[in-house]
Image (cartoon, rainbow, N blue to C red; front, top):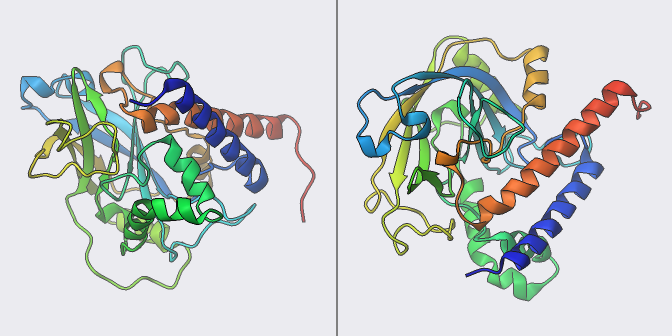
Length: 323
């Protein structure tokens, strides 16, 4: 059992480091997942014939929610004004924001939304908040670096994946969440899976692939959940351990449909930059579980607020032009 006081102190340390990096590399940019491949609108269609045990929260009734969906690279900005090329190894992210979601939320900064945060790998790269700190120190401490080999192995697996189109790959929550009185993980699986192909010679080929796809056709995903079995097979506090399908089968609860559309224009990009995604933008029935998610609650909220404060300040009083 972790010490809550120690966890809080470590979370504050991680937050301070992130805020410092945010100020240095671009205070109006996201600290992670800063490069967007596209912010698109869609609809989240809850299945009509769910078992009663899954009819909880947003899944309680067969209905359709409007949604904004953001696809991104996981990395932070390399420096002010410079984002990593899509050709370099990186995690790929999907963030879903459902709209018109009624009911009291865990956080009060958004009234009618429900967010889901995912990456293209089934496990997270650190076990707890200490893992974030150790990862930052590993480059200067050989003993910590040795102990962090499992983390480096996961990061290598994530970075080794060949992705030709963000609309054609599967994404996972990596960390657990409530489904009423149950614990679950969730996944978003494309109905049109990715095919092997060569990576185009473009720094922004993932956005270009999305533009080409959605100019001609829809994209559809299955939204799947896995239910907690026991602490050995499906642990709550170890997001580095995969919940295997043979132990916790996937069950489809909704369809995410992204209609054919034009999204690569400046007004949409401004909306994209203004959005804030957090696993804590949620109904209590879908509250995040585990120490990693608890740390995210404070870190995500503070970083998003700092970013929005910078944008508001810039609108009130512009900064000098920087050569």
